Length: 116
Image (cartoon, rainbow, N blue to C red):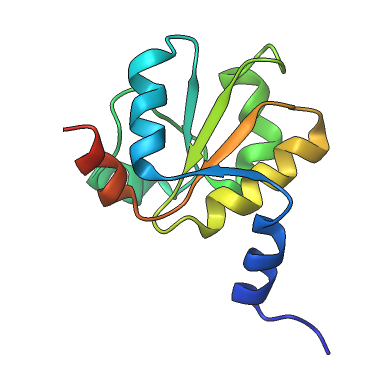
């Protein structure tokens, strides 16, 4: 029987690197070379986003990631509304050859709160 979307995200989560919003906030404070990508849709990004984030919707990630991260070895931090799209995006980027990708688990609001 096929998995539903939530089951697929849970299965994918086991194969990628993730962090909590608090861990992401610590990394953002410590790592100046960290590439931050918001994989939500543009309207979501405009409503609330990290100032350092580049908005690349998950559906466009494969086509636009090289612009945001020209060196595949750089550290990439992905976030979205609740963590699901970030996990799926992390899997995609890993499969594309980006070895240092982390998805933030949880809500963008939690990430923003952890930074304040």
